[in-house]
Length: 380
Image (cartoon, rainbow, N blue to C red; front, top):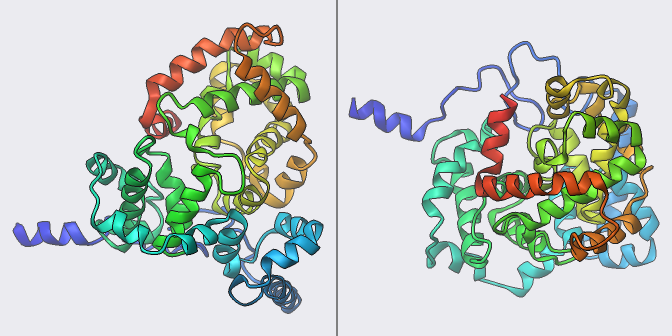
């Protein structure tokens, strides 16, 4: 009995006998879903991919030495290439370069090691309890107390010490887990810091603070954008009493790293790290635009299910992202942020927002650090 228990503590649960896709996720039985690339690539396709990688290597330089110079000289080329997708073999390095995390790492030698080894966190037990919920079908995180879970624990514990005001919230696990698949523990930690503290773009720590204030703001902005860009669908949501807190919270909290095909997640993150949070709004609007004609016909229960389970064709990045980039939202998001921060006394509040804001606030406050668990339960 003791011997069996010892084995259970060190070996993965379900053995990946069904094989894994190109990203390391165990394939579901009888799955026909793509893993991001055609099963067989022609010689021409391989040669084209090799040329693309050579262009990226030339743009980056050895270890990223030429990156900043190239971006200053050719910003439009960089933006176009990132939107087309970063080569997977270079993704980890490029993510560090475009997020500003490489600079943070170099400016803080030894800090991560100190946080992991010498500091203690009030969130340690909660982190341990949640570890197995992060990408449970990925081989790197399947082994209980294995290298993947240990690295994820270290990053989340270190951040909870680094920023005790934010501490630990479960949604962080998806961000840290995604980063760990493309870089070392320390690199992933500093990229998480860069995102939450705003090394390049606006800080995201408000997504995880008590009451999730930034989630509330983003949901309010998103609701208005839906009404402006797709008024018929927006009105249908009002009539069916659907608001963004029911389906879009995890889009912002995990930046599409939960419940979406991984090849879409990666392409979204490529652009998100370079262009900022506006991309989450754009992709969200693109999903609704793609499914608009179907969504507008559905009653409440079916509508909510559809908003949490988009069809495979809607999540093809080569189809979805070009739609997303047609939404020009930067200036409007700034305006909506100012309106939101004015509060209810501002006359610009729509009746829809006034109607739903109390519900969103109560929902966010109640869910708190358990928001992802609740979304998982709802999805099932």
